[in-house]
Length: 358
Image 1: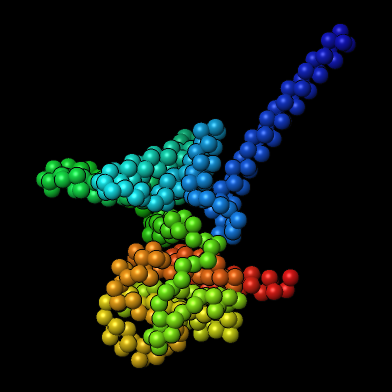
Image 2: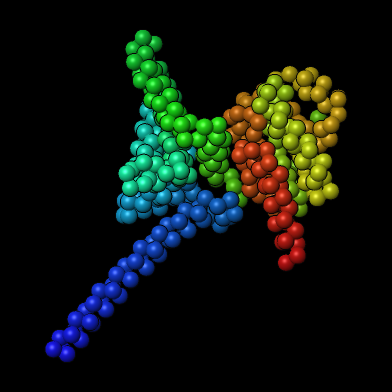
């Protein structure tokens, strides 16, 4: 009897030990995929080779397949929304493939929303379902809008007539409106800010390959006729701003940059701006009033100019923050709010000063 009891205790101990090992393995796997993805998308990962966004997609897809992890599913949806359009000669096919990619992202995030929602025993949402649930709804709305846009583009490029597109327009518009109403019912006035935050994250991911690398040469002269060489500013924190006097969206950013330059001028923070105005006279008139005391350039062909194409500028305002080593660290650093611009500059100043002390 004693021998049998001892054997039972040993067996129970092995079962507990095995369960503990499995639990530890699950925990290790959970930490492992997160660390891999964080490293791939971290703005400070200078030594990562290859297409970082597609590498992150592979890690996340494997985690979703192996563990049905809702957090990985949410991140995978975000990555799919950020992966750029394929460059194909058949532009209609490229649009169809992109629409399919956005559909997959929407399905992923819808599934993640169901898994991450915080509910009580009756199934009712608690605290609006929680922040992760609300993030899922925001991404689902963005994915739906983008899929609609690409599906419409593919249809038009494929020769579809306007009359035949009406049912698609009505159905997609209703789905977008329904998802927006659902998000607004939870977030109210905060809806716009949450959507802006997610769009900003996607924008950063889309330009991920630029982070940690030296930027393209500007290849342009300032208004005084002097060439701009970014290597001259190593040791400084540099903001390169693309803007236009013709775009109202540029005005608040330019005002914030003006205040920033005055505040941090003695901290070796430099601003270089490239105006994409078609007509330089508006730029000259604004600069004549004073108050923008940094080097200015003008690219009269706007978004089709060589410098805009080389820097992949597709909307204004745009720009990057470059650290003291001459590497791009932030893309559109005001995208999550103008206060984020100053916070990003402070971070780069602190890192530079810390490096000098080492």
